[in-house]
Length: 230
Image 1 (cartoon, rainbow, N blue to C red):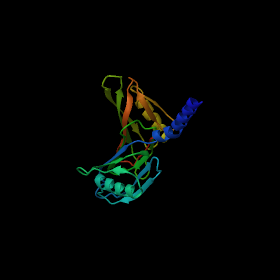
Image 2: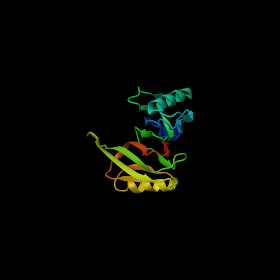
Image 3: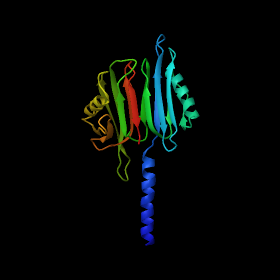
Image 4: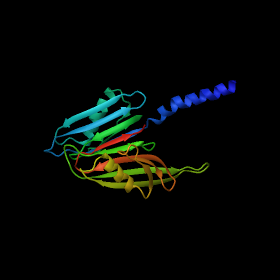
């Protein structure tokens, strides 16, 4: 009877803690580039912290010439004010990074010369959504890079790197961009389309488990990138 109680208690702990532990991960946001010297523009940066639920929603109209480093500094200060734990290394050559310790979602819309890359640095995201541009229409190229490892007991992990790129146009909605990502990765990536409007990388076809994934959209248009980890 005592053994049964212990087993039931252990199962309860797994159910209680398991989903919470999975619904988070360290995320790096890297901002680079700069708005044109005669082009001011509104950008969006949103971060949701796991466990605490603390959230940053930053929609700000930036002056012409604003750099990625300046935006990174602003996001860091506002995120800390919102109670989100992060690390902000010193900017380099106009670019800046932020490492959010435990995020459940990150969403960015930049464009106009500013670019942003979202990296899940310890695991694969649970969902990636690419939403069409708003104020600055135009084509874009979604670029996804993943690191993988094949782990065998008693041996060093066998590591690999895979990437894919998908061309997107302003006429494409979220389901269409998800389909473009799925097709672009068909040769090397095992993936799925949860909810039809998003894309989820699962693993590499050669057997490697994804240990990190980066997503960005190249181009001048203000495409929105949404990455979830829950």
